Image 1 (cartoon, rainbow over the protein chains, first blue to last red):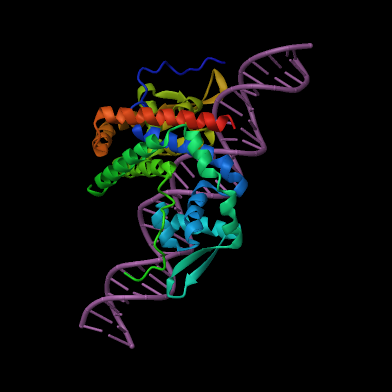
Image 2 (image 1 turned 90 degrees about the vertical axis):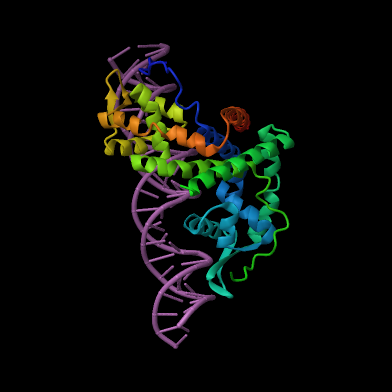
Length: 154
Length: 154
DNA sequence: CACGTTAATATCGTACACGATATAAACAAC
DNA sequence: GTTGTTTATATCGTGTACGATATTAACGTG
């Protein structure tokens, strides 16, 4: 342990930053998800997309985007990677050629069973009872709405 | 409004995802920060770095990393951008040539005054009383610790 | 003091995020 | 039916994140 030239901190500038705590918690989840999803060949955002495709098996890019709060600039390359992995197909909607329809392949369908244990593992890792988790979710959703309204009104 | 081929969702796969709510809340903060920080020429992570430099004015890359939870692979290019913007200087620590010391320039120092209104604006945008914010921070910090412990023990 | 180890940054590759813009299909109005 | 507008994706550029590896300095032990 060499001597660090850092002077003793008088007041932690990070202490009052709620945003930082949110970010840290989000990153902590990512770290727990990673070893669970890596064997499936999925990143966390890719897992969110698959999670929506498993029950519906066929969705437009835009509908996926609304559900996971991402736009085509992020989703298009992400879904292309899922396609390269053989999990989904991409094709134009014949009813509306502007749309791209994402559909599960057999392999993508089969992945659902292999991912079935993930939510339970995450729930366990939180160490929180269900009721407390739901209370936290309500708090966060209210906060998110308030913040977005504040951003929009500017 | 054309007819969307999306079938009615039976159960929202996103509903139980606490991680998603954390992510959404974090993104909502980013959107509120952006118009406040853009006039200063800072991104949010860059603002976090400056927030630590303003009281101490001279920190090693590693010490900054410990405070903002980032490593050199992210910090090095970020700090180089701050350097190109004329806000900081980078130089080797003469006492330990492995270290790089980041120091505020006059311009970087001066930016503190221009950023002084930011925390108040953020606090106001949350619409939450101070006590509730602190309670949420405690919850999030506890959750983060539990999650990281769970990730480490695997 | 050589030599293996540790420590502090940097570099590289991959994958998000997201603002701005481009493209092309669908729609609307005349 | 041409023309203007909206809608759905895609592309591009910049900036994080982060695992893996490289580089160089400091340290420890014989």
